[in-house]
Structure formats: C-alpha cells, structure tokens
Image 1 (cartoon, rainbow, N blue to C red):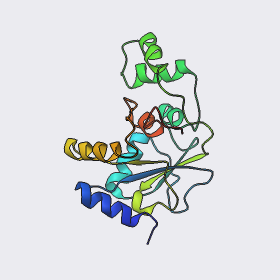
Image 2: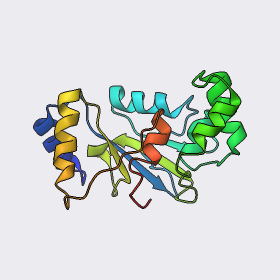
Image 3: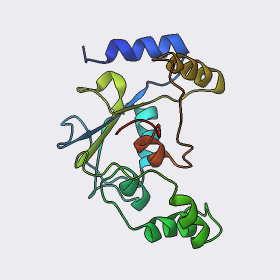
Amino acid sequence: MAKYEKQSDVLKQTLGLKWSPIAVTWSDKPDERGSLDKQPSVCQVVEDVKEKNVIVNLTKENCMCPGGKHYLGLEVLPLRVIAMVWTRFHKTYASQEIAERQLKSYPEPPAGKGICVIIGPLEKAMSDPDVVLVFSNPEQADRVAGLMAFLGTEPMTFFPAGNVCSAIANPRRDRQN
C-alpha cells in the first residue's frame, strides 16, 4: 500500500470526488514509475494524470511549454518572454505591455526546488507532495476551503492565478515555498 493511498481514499469519499487528488512533487530525480516522454504542456499532463491515473515526470527537456517550464521553476525565463507567450500564443492579454504589467505581480517561480516535477495520483505518491490538486465542483471546493480555514484559523490568501502551472507553483501567496 502506497503511503498516501488511504488519504486519497478519504479525500475522495469525504468530498465525493470523481477523480483522485493529484500530487505534485519537486525532486532531484524522476519517479521510476513515471513517464519521461515529451509533454506539450503542464495543463495536458494534469489532464492525463486525472483521466489515465498515470505518473509523469516533467523536466526542462521534456516539457514543451515555455510558461510551464517557467512557472514550475524548471527554466526561469525573462519577463518579456513569458509576457510574449501569454500575449501571442495563449491570447490572454491584449498587448505585451499589459501582460508585463500583470505578470510583475505574480510570485517568483520556485527555482532550485528540483530538476524534475513529478505529477501523479496522490495514492501513488512515494514521498510528501509539495502540492495536492483536487478537481472539484463549487460545492466540493467550498468544503475544501472551509476545512483549510480551520488549520490554525489564519486567514487564507490565495494567488488568483490564471493558468494551471502558476497555480501549482504558487497555491498561496503567504506560504513559504
């Protein structure tokens, strides 16, 4: 039995989740059970893990999305390059200037946490994950937020990220990475 199999089952049952929670772990070496195949984006990896229950190792070499590499700290890029990705490819911002102004407010990427980001179902995690993602509907998300609020009763400050890779790397502004 994997270390987190029971916790995954409890979360799925308690929250009525359709999919397993997803563990995200920075590491200095890939998980032997995971794929090192080229991946188009972090978004696609998360979807594959959710749907296919697989483990994927993301590295600077196999992640094809510049934004994903940047936000996961695998290859930190200049602001102008990240703004260009969001403006020209994702069409998120109307101009390079607007993109740069908005992206300056984002937290710094977690550079140096590891050469690999292991993304897989929580029940398959072999070490403590840095982040756990939960696919939920609004009712389930409200339950999760309510449960988290009681951890020391501190106010929660979430980073309102507009993309998957940034939300993975910066789930809370006030938390130390």
